[in-house]
Image 1 (cartoon, rainbow, N blue to C red):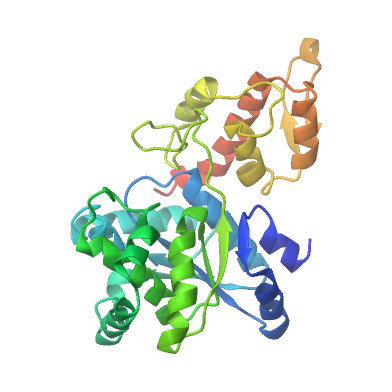
Image 2: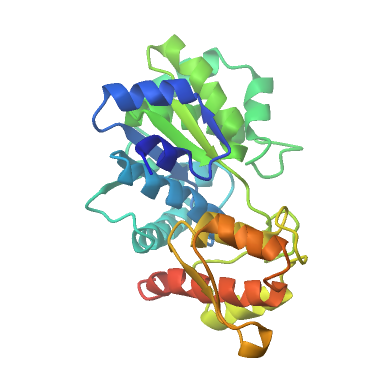
Length: 316
């Protein structure tokens, strides 16, 4: 798999692919970042962007991870002390998932977001950003956006300035970050900064087939125990022979198959014996054809997700 294919794997959108090709041709070690708001458990939605950072790292990129403690405070996720503690926990999770400190630059927002130069650039961007635009940028990521606070209007402005001050070429995030990234692409050049490229990953379904939600506990967290994952898999939505809008198939597509070249489903001989799939396409064909039963798919997902998260549990 060449660099471009690796970067494009499992992404929903690249803004723009032509700019990405030019970047790869002109810069030996481009830079990319993701900002994570420390606000609770790290689940597989977060890990999807970690996977993309690992792809970028393998493609020769230098990676920065922003532990956005000030953003979390502005978004009403706790006191500064509380969100800093969660940020430390998040950092340990990300390192265990493969973003080691030797090859990744971990930055806390509070380390630079209170500096004079940063604040001045935030104020400059507020002068050219309408209130309506700031509100729309936060619709997908803010709390209580039916009655937003002024701090939540500053949030997307800060995120744009983060991209400029960190000096990165690419901003990576879930597709829910798109409006904020577009604000950065349009607003930063007016302040004398370059417009960032953007890579957006999909938003995964919850295990019940609905939107992933902390209140519904319909996701896999990196600190779930082996037994937790097995229980969640048994109850998970997994319609037979349906490969689209199937949360278990999404786990294989975005998390398991990129890490394992061969997937082995262990089955008794009376049910056909073990089934081996080399890559996601083979798995998709096996499930869509009815060759693989939903319960076998769930059992396989539980086995491999526990293998992936075993190293995380050991360090957090």
